[in-house]
Length: 410
Ligand code: HEM
Image (cartoon, rainbow, N blue to C red; front, side, top):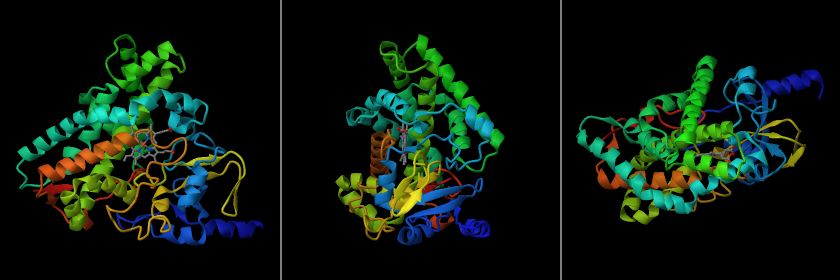
């Protein structure tokens, strides 16, 4: 392409992220891209850099299953979505979310048993207790004046659960929730985000150091003990693994709790069906995960070699964003994809990603969502929104989609 032609082409590239017009649907451009150009280019709003977007379900899986892509966010082509000064970026230690095999495999294997289906089955009774306690507090407020479900239930439940799992004192939650917020949101200055990383690192470092000499019955202590017996990683790796769990373990599930409750209350026919047949709840959880796809661009990669995909050549070094909100609304896999239908076979969704980095906490998230939705509907059958859904504030500006508040009454 000649220089002026290339410049004109650059100007024509759409900007990413694109906005959702409706909470139940992806940005309208995704459907057009999927049809016309399922592997296309866009320009990142945050820094003007080019990235590839992937909008088809089969291509999403193909790319994320390809060993020629890297998740390393320090690579120059990596499509970062928050502004991070280069110096800070290079100094932040990588978590295993951003590592490639074999380093990634070592840390993932150490943690995987903590999230097995069996472990989650054992944990369910404790999660039920936590949910019941939070709902007791809500019920004590009477229900005639609106209560914000985000602060009353959606945030404390996954926060309490991840604290117990890791062995983090829950009284510290205002601090780590604030740090996680600063790390995950666009609307934060570089200084604030840098400080949040630094403070969270020091906090978790202190916690791991404490458990090295005074272990408890928790995940961090088990990681330390396992690593003493079979040395595989350093102290700093256990700090970064624990930090990753703490951040990813509450904000994502909290957003799904609030959005899911809103969707159920807004669709009385679906709500009645799940009330009449509680065994439909597991399907409802999968459908809600698919429908909202809250971590839409959470699987950024860089091509390590040239990759041919749908007749397009992605060059080595290029950034790639496989979009799970686009893949999960691919009509060839999910007919009438924008419709919320708890009876649909939604299990092939990719809301938890795909390939070696597929969400390690997915069994925990599924179980928490199942317990929260089921218990809330059973214990507060008259629950309703205290504000029209179109007046709610959605997290359009955050890395993970969700609701800022969800006022409810009963
Ligand atoms: C509804 C809730 C959740 C959603 C939608 C979600 C989504 C995702 C996605 C899309 C990925 C893939 C990232 C990639 O490929 O680069 C991921 C990875 C991950 N998630 Fe989740 N997640 C959720 C809950 C959780 C919970 C509860 C935890 C746990 C403690 C967790 C821990 C992680 C970790 C550690 C990874 C990195 C895995 C790896 O790199 O091998 N997530 N999650």
